[in-house]
Length: 398
Image 1 (spheres, helix red, strand yellow):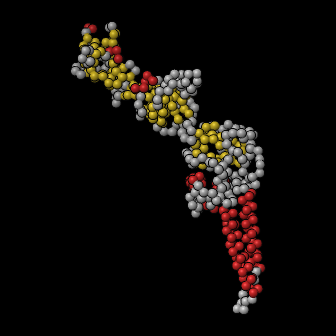
Image 2: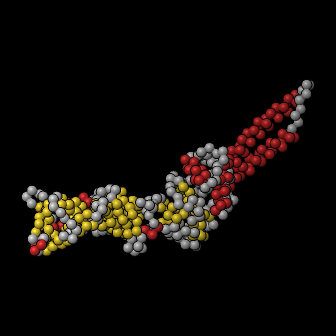
């Protein structure tokens, strides 16, 4: 007879599979123009003049990441992508998002209404660029020329008013009446000129070019790629950021589908770096079969079931891009239990599970048992009657 000992241990039923980390959704910054702090908007070539971050690094709000033609590329928190230059006088959800981002950095926007780019937002933008160490970009030369023209009109009308006699006594002449009418007209023109000046001033001043800013939902954000070096011409993205945390997708053998459920505990190990993490199964996908003749980088070669693995705490940067081993605990005993090899379990016509315990002189004693968790070829057992202790020998074959 072939026998094996009864053991007392914690049983854990596990499923082991491979998984790959990916960046999830990303967002890139691709400068298309160069802002001239003077507002001249002079045409310039776009050349990388500084690289301040590297892949895997965490970047914070308002931190220059790359510099092109002497201008910074930086990120601010926000979910609405940059789709236009943010300039004084404009309004909208993107302006409100900019104001919230500036306030999160401690740059208040004063009395500006939410979503309106006014004097308070101008002052906050100035503080932002000053903190980054760059000249503040200004609106176009056309807007600045409009301010100058409006100011000259106001100055001219003010001078005319100063030179126009106020006239008017009790014996007013026709000439006096004409002068009075001219004076009233000048006052009207001056009021209109002052309104035009106020409007022009509201639309000029500090602004944020779309080529320098990228909004990212969560900051700090991880740098996915910096595909440029100093001296390179800007022909595409200069930096790519992850919109969220890294994502881990496991590829489970379809044969194990019934063993794994959402919420089960998992451990993640990178054999390359030695890093480990604890996690849970967040979601179980549908059976995936790679199309014939195509290469699916997320596949182990055949059909698989994708599992979304959620970390108990944010993934370490060392996991970035790693192929890892995922061990999922499908079942476990609360503490040490009696266990025997699966081959020791027998079942009669009444479906009652039994084991044969070897006694003195080679005798055998049949013990009815209930079974529990099975793992690694062992099965949890509890005797229905009689005794069973660790170290006893059970028959597993002949």
